[in-house]
Image (cartoon, rainbow over all chains, first blue to last red; front, top):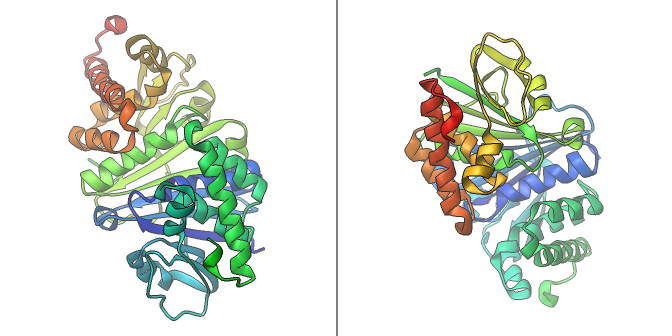
Length: 189
Length: 189
């Protein structure tokens, strides 16, 4: 794996991307014992309803904490995809929620599409776990943090009342990643 | 006010400093229509139980998102105070929770001491609002964001069940700041 990995989690306000960024950074920094920085920026974009959480993970101390070029981009809305895909590295990975992102720009990065929001609702009865399913997909596809670390980080951060559904969401994300890797069809979800 | 204000919220894990940082950044970036970046770093310190949330607020786009020298430092533990006070500007402000920080290092910055955790428990029945009282004190003392903006940001972020106690905590923080400014004694709390 690269020395420094840059991840951009993008979508709209209310999709839980800040929490997802914190969980991913804690998985790396606390449980996988790496260095990690999570950054949240607010300005005109945030006032327009966009949300973007950035995480940088490294084996060494991190000098510049913001994403320069994303290695991994999660796009939960079309607007976010259109905006942040430009900043994805050529050999990066785009995970796009096909419930929301219908137009994938032509890029050289590897693209994984899956109806994440739809599946959250259908399989777990709530859109609120879309962020955690997304983390499961990202970790399953990229191993950017260990599965043990992300499990611990999810459990430590989500309120105890919703722990079970969030654990299920994470495992569902791992399963989806496995199928996306082997290019199985989505019909089972 | 300075063009770029750097705030460091420091203490231990579980004291709600990440949420406080997010609320402060959202107050500035969404409700006061400035630019703001919130950063959370994880590494050996976080694994030792320390927690530090950084917020940079500016009228212009923010190039470097991390704190270089804090203008405002909140210290909710002695360890955090000892560590981060070195990085406070000479004419900065230290807000120390005197329930936890008993040794204030000799510094040229302005120091405000108040038993925040103790007062949270005594006046509002829970330590969990220590972070929000602290935000009230910081905003009351420094006007780094407007009181309207911080009120909106608190309401938007805290779960609806605990909105009332958090609103009270914020107002209590404003009151404490007023007294700290006029150097009234703490006995009324």
